[in-house]
Length: 282
Length: 249
Image 1 (cartoon, rainbow over the protein chains, first blue to last red):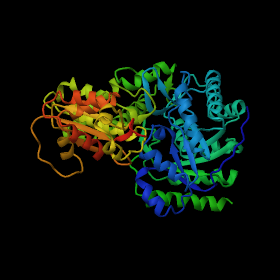
Image 2 (cartoon, rainbow over the protein chains, first blue to last red):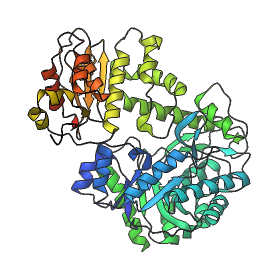
Image 3 (cartoon, one colour):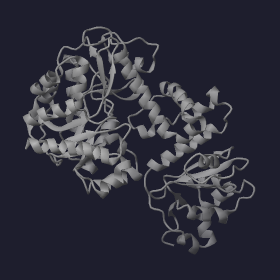
Image 4 (spheres, chains in turn purple, cyan):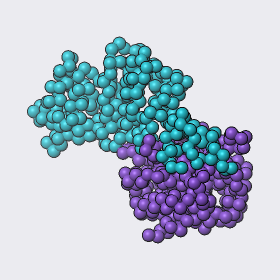
């Protein structure tokens, strides 16, 4: 089946929605023109979060970001979870739907983290089947997000861009390019983030992510960046973002901040920074 | 490398870094793999803290974190719906030796669990009680009352509602002696909690099991001091009545 990208999300700045910002957002959302929610936070039977979201979607374009399907996992996808995603997408009608090239569930349960996988012929087939299954379940195109990774695998035989390109070719999915993840993985895996951006199949990008990371080092003293979403976006990531926009023109851009969540003004100023870059790209 | 080697090592720090997980130069990943171990245990511990803030306050953040390190390895989430995480904590605390001197702690955890369940349960509109007032005594005693889907009942040998109040952002209360039966519900947007009078918990549970009012009253009356009028008044005051078989009378 083929799906067309029908984004109702404007090529402007959005942020990851946090309930503690609700009042500020409704008073004055500033440069924030759309919101992204994590699908799994809205799968309960009822209650205030769902009521809030029903209200918010009348005021803002909403994008839906899944964090729990485990598309990169070795286990079959959880059909109950696919049904929950369909139910949410059916009533919310989000402007975009995205999930991760990562896994989170195995025999010992749900591990609440986005875990890495080796890239090879077997995993490309598995991931493509999972993406097909998801797109069939929700009846629309998904965007697949490039991950942050801290380790490499001896079982890897393909590079990430070839892997993502192959998934797009086999499934017709789109891509979510997380620019911070490019910087984090490039540093951790010792490849050039700039070259990655130059090679990326930008024609398939439906959304960009920006976020902050933490800095650590590995056993040998090499820098090890952690995708912690608890800091402002750093300058080298803003520069990479400009490089992406130079290739693509303006695209919906989300600032993620999931831990040590700051005051609304801090998050809004990150969105303003993105808005300025988007303005320069037009 | 199979993910079936990767996954168990995340929760068991005694297991070595899985074979085939390396740094970009092909050396064993070591600390790089530990980032995932830390992320998993840290994020689950944070989720546990968010789910059980009053338990954390009672034992202190340092103790809670150490306990969380044990708990999350033993009971990782069974689903990606993190709002359901850790229903096992109350029973875990019952058999966790370091908290044996805090016998009320498991019920405080149960109260926090029931609050979270009530918060996320299906919405339903409460009805007013006028229909009960106009029914004849016979009609009333034969009626079945449908109570709110968010309703939870906790029966404790300890005054856990008062303990909860004294350790959350509410006014301080004098701790009563003896146990408390507690009604937790979310009739509209806000969670409501109140202590139940004698026999009230059994009465509400019988109604929840779809017993007619007369039978539920009999069950309630097994406890000395049960007062049916007071308990029906409590149902109305708590806004947990959503339907009755009296409609149309």
